[in-house]
Image (cartoon, rainbow, N blue to C red; front, side, top):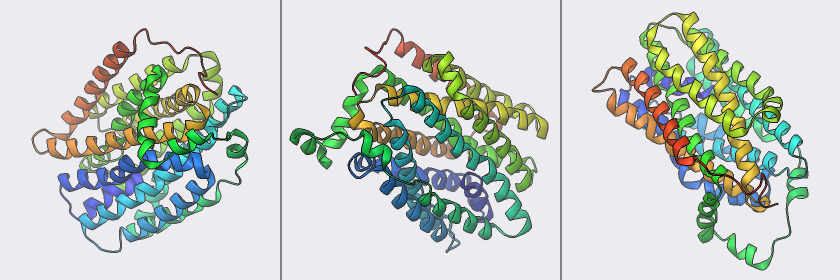
Length: 379
């Protein structure tokens, strides 16, 4: 729901394009800074506690963000809401990636985690558009906060954490100190699969950040109502959920890297096509293709990360990837909010697609010849 509500709320407050870029970027600022410490906390404290703390704090900040009708205060509280949502997502990812004994079961759990997230993305925009049309935007934010709060009850136990958690040696305990978390996290970049996961995440999240903000503005400028925008975004998320549900079979038949490259290519091409037509059928088709790429790329990235990361550092690896994700989500809207003053929005959207294809080609060139010593180098 939030991916539709933030740009519409800024428009409701008559905020500028720059203000929209700032408020969308604000969601990712705090996670960009604190993702690695949160990942380290998930390694030490367990996933369930991180999910609980993150979801409750995100729900509270979501409500506070609309308490005052000011576009800058809205962004301030969305910064804390984004931190809470990221903490909950880090906890959930850490829980599934700790599965080491059964690779097939891990792929299955990753697929279901991705599908559950995309199901929420599917129902959220449609529900938000319906609530705005039938009640008010404030009510849509209240329902969004309630949905986030319910995530606190989605993790039923610590079985995964306890079975995968290893007894730490004194040196490992000292290395978990705050001053060393960042060093340990960045040392994980020695693994080619983790580097590919990071580079792929930057491309994917930049595309998603613009889909969730300026693409909504693009449709709004075409004269679309909130319900129609919500339906199109929901169709894309439904496609993501379907692709994620099939990911277990896909990952058994195809290499994770191949799936990642193909899915990101599809997502980038969609942005080149989006400005070509204002037809709802055409935009829905674009979002379905984007959604399929989104679902497959998400499971591919998580799978690559899980496969290459030592068991005791899964939280740190998830935190590292989340930090890079949020950096992309900060940079893309700010850059768009600045450039839209000089370049028309449809041209910018197509330009993002072209730039993403170029970045994907550069990533493939950078990663050429890189091979892991094994699928699970450290267990």
